[in-house]
Amino acid sequence: MCTQNAFRYWGRIAYDEKYGGVALSNDEGERMCRAMGDKDILFLRNHGIIVSGPTVAQTYDDLYYLERAAMVQVLAMQTGRPLHNIDDAMAEHTARQIAGEAQQAFLHFESLKRMLDRSTPGWSRLAAA
Image (cartoon, rainbow, N blue to C red; front, side, top):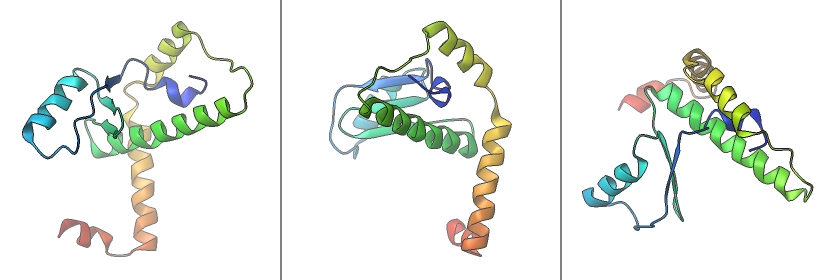
């Protein structure tokens, strides 16, 4: 990992190595839950990711910054130059600093809703229907 945004996911990601097709059955959903274990992010091989959290705002914020951290990592790797990765101890320290910071996620989500209010007035009535 080479960016600060990536450190917020330190120790929070599980990996599902078995692609089970489209999750149309309870069995597949239960299998993915077991694969997720005590983590709140699950990378599904050949499929995508699942992000869970205590609020919609925090879950969206995690997904948003996870995508950006991955994008920056891929772009950095494409340079072909050696990356200056942060050591595990500093990554863990940074993750602890970021953990539990719900206010930033709430403000981020509220700002997105205000943008949606301006671009699509009445969207919340549509979402509730």
